Image (cartoon, rainbow, N blue to C red; front, side, top):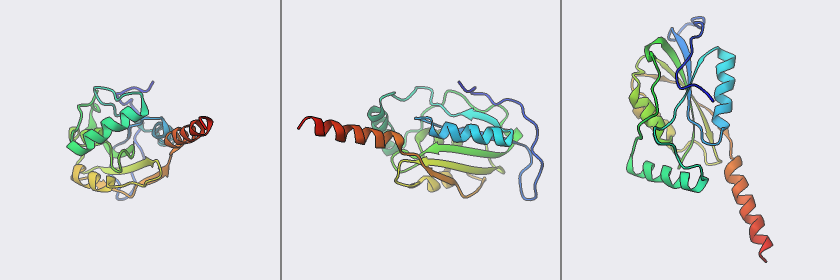
Length: 177
């Protein structure tokens, strides 16, 4: 299990045009795809790692999870988080990872961005999606990451869970005939 609080790490060498300070990899995951990318970044960069989690966990059941995420998106709800990053001021660069939920950034990502003062930092998004692209997530980042330099995101299709459910449903439908 990953810790909610970042751990100490060495300062990254400063590069021209880059904010000084440590690097943070913050991420939200549901099925684990985004966690894999976050862990790879954390190890490669010697960065601190922070898992974004809502105070009240989402349902384990995929379809119940999707229904709740849709209600939150439609109502603009931003759930309270289980924790915040300690000493966010120490970070110059934040890699922010999340899956696309309902064609946009998940509600906990909006909560994370509102809960932390990230002005003057560089935001490097990494986004996973189930085949529908990034939707309106760029607009969410632009409206919630005020004062940050937002770089072009790394985007990766990671559709295994939805594809698996659809294939199983198709198979079950054929066995009833």
